[in-house]
Amino acid sequence: MANAERFPDVGRSWYEQGFARALATLAGSFQGLAERKLLRVDDPLLAANHFVGLLLWIPINKAMYTGDYRSTPDELERFAVAAVQAFLSGYGPAHRSGARTAQATGSTTHKSLSKVKAKAR
Image (cartoon, rainbow, N blue to C red; front, side):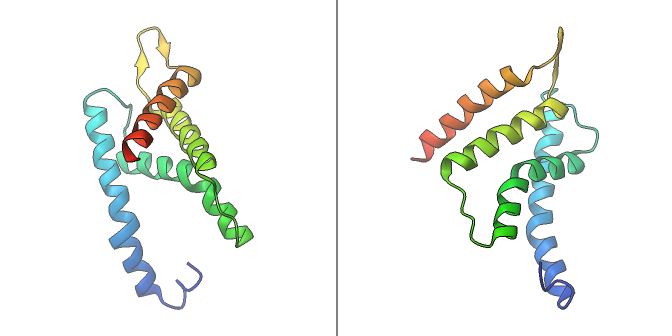
């Protein structure tokens, strides 16, 4: 990032071959979830950017601005759960009786993340 202005081809290539591809893949997944009525998404690529921004904003900024910050696994899990809750508040499906509550979404999200963590061990 610091040298993108001096080496624009390197920065552009890194973005296009890395980050942009990850966003496109995530956008495709969000489109599929929207088609199944599991998300409300008009612009899947914008939704992917929102999700990644929510997920990475806190740890990346702490690392960037302090130079030596290291997130703990518990912090990263807390950041991830909060990111999913916020994302689903805006993009999650609405129930017949109204929108999902952040508390209900958070409980489900935390259980799902715990299952993923247990399988990874």
